[in-house]
Length: 69
View 1 (cartoon, rainbow, N blue to C red):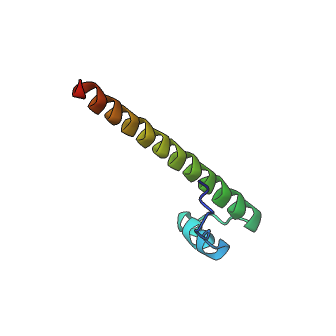
View 2 (cartoon, one colour; view 1 turned 90 degrees about the vertical axis):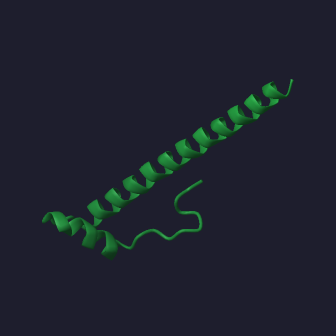
């Protein structure tokens, strides 16, 4: 699942507003790189979460099946 699927990315203006809170001025290129990196990290976190849930669901089904006998 990609964070871009069905969801729009934050605009550069929104990102600039968020990032300006630390008092550092970023170029447009830096803002794009930061935004892309954060979306990439979010994709990895979502994928890890989905895999963990699939593994937990499979374990629960296996546990239920073992207890039926």
